[in-house]
Structures are given as structure tokens and as C-alpha cells.
Length: 372
Ligand code: IPM
Ligand code: MN
Image (cartoon, rainbow, N blue to C red; front, side):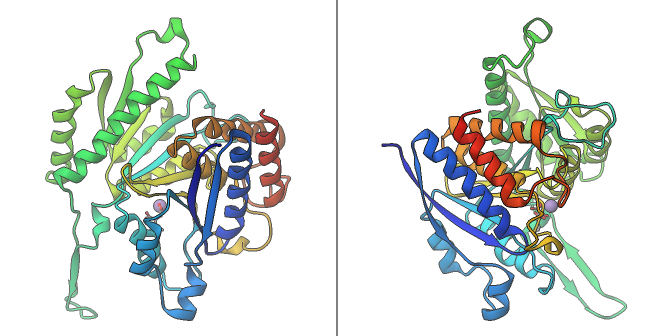
């Protein structure tokens, strides 16, 4: 008998619950195929519950969530709730309270998926963004003075600690090493052409302006870099990165950056990999409980129509299984997704897939079961 994983499921708002059903369906198909099981417990945190009870994610729920092996999330954000309440009260609360200090966001263009970048294909767009997830501008440090007067002052401080920065950088260096080893092992590198190719980690920052914060990042980067002698260190300013993700996406292998910049550049990353319908992410605590989510949000206008693309959530499920150590199951989901994008689906956009939400889930689950 294989292992049993305890999974907390949280559909959340808008189209979140719909995509999560498909994400679970596919993960279950992989579990059946690869001989492990998932014991699931559902949590109904989100806008509806907040409007009824005033509760976002209470401390007692955080304590409960600590007992799980992973959290599988649909989306947070409700049109009838003022922006910030659910995002901070649920999503950011979970990230911070469970110390999910990495936000891992792969940017990979699958065959058959359209990218807005002319002349670039799957061989050019395959990199990962490691976003610091518990510091920077997201800590809520700051304040307001003289509110609603002409003299109002608003301060929002970016918090960067040596410990926080270093653990994020180490995760990125490790990942870069592993990624390289895996690629070489899978024969994905053209041996003759790329012999000796080493992993490359690009620190994305703004050392020319944020001379305290990114000075710390840069020093830490070069201090610990020599411990990873098969990783080449590279640096790019965040604004230049926004150009190069479009102009030369093939340059990037693994990138690492702070919370705010990571938020912004991963939206650009999502667009070049085919849009929010396919972009997945993981909020990871390598020593604790991690939470996986499609990064696109709740897309409320499509709620209940069966038109939203569940692939982002399905791919988040893949990341979850890989992080739980079920690599084969993860790889099987990826192959099934690629078969769907390359041979079946018309588009990644809501309503244009040529299938309903549940049909996409059924199809990918079937491909997993068939062992494509
Ligand atoms: C994301 C989102 C969140 C963030 C919001 C909803 C708080 O944009 O996951 O990228 O800013 O991190
Ligand atoms: Mn974002």
C-alpha cells in the first residue's frame, strides 16, 4: 500500500470551487494510478462565509491546517467584499502564518498553447520564478497619518531580513541545481550543443535605486553563491526583466526576487506561457505545510458557467504531488496536460477551449489513467 496524504481543500470564491473540483479529479486519477491516496477535508473560507460570519481565516483554522500534508486552494477574491479583506485575511494570512516563504511559479509554454510573443515556442519559454513570499512590501509594516486631510502621509515599508532573504536564495540555488540535474537526466539537453551547460540563477532586483533592500539581496546572493559551484549567477533589474521576459525569454532558467517584484513579473510570466488559464503556483514552506493554487484569481464573471479553464488548478495539483514526493504522478499529470493542450484544446481562454471546465478535467484525468 502506498502512502495516504492529508489534503485540505479550499475552493474559495468565484470560479475557485469549479476549478478545484477538476484539480482534485486529476490528482485522484494520478493517486489511483500510482498507488497512493488522499484523505481530503474541505474548508469553506471565502467571501460567502465572510459576509455571513465576518470571519476570514481564524487562528483556530490555521492551527487545523497545520495538521495537513498540503492545502489545495481554488481562488480568493469576492466582488461583493472590499478588496484587501479576503486577500489579506485568508490568502496572505495562510502564507504568513504557515511561513510559506517561497512562492514558486513555473513559466512553461506547453505545445499547442498560444503565446503572444511572436516567433517563440516551447523551447524558448521554460523558466521558474522563485518569489519570496513572507517579507518585502507584504508585511503590512507602515502606517498612515492625517488621514483624509490634504496633509495625509502613507508609508508602506519593504522589510528584508538576512535570514528571510538567505533562505529564499538557498531554495532558488537548490532548485536550479535540481532542475539542471533533472534536465540532463531526462536527455532534454542536446548533448553536443549544450555539453557542460550549467544552471543559471538570475537575481531580479533594483540595485540602482533600492540601495538598502537589494544591496542586502545582492550581498547574500554572492556570499552563498560559491556553495553552489555548478550554478551561474546572473543579475537583472526588474524593469529590464520585464523587457527580457518578452524579448529573450530563453535567457531565463531560474529567477529569484522579492515579494512585490515577484508578484508583478509572474503576471508577465503567466501571459507568455498562455495566460491565467494555465499558470500555476505553490506557496511553499519546505519544512511545513504548503499551499497550491492557480495564480489567476477568482474570475467572478465566469462563475458557474462551466467555461473557466481548470488547467492552472490541475497543474497546481501536479506541483503539490511533486512536492509531496510523488514525482511519477506529477510527471504523468504533466504529460496528460500536454496531450490536452497539443492535441485537443482550441484555446486556453475561458469559453474558447472547445470544452467545458469539467470536460477538460475528465479528459486530463482519463489521459492520466491511460498512462499517456
Ligand atoms: C498573487 C495575488 C496575491 C498577491 C493577492 C491576491 C494578494 O496577486 O497571488 O499573485 O499579491 O500575492
Ligand atoms: Mn499577483
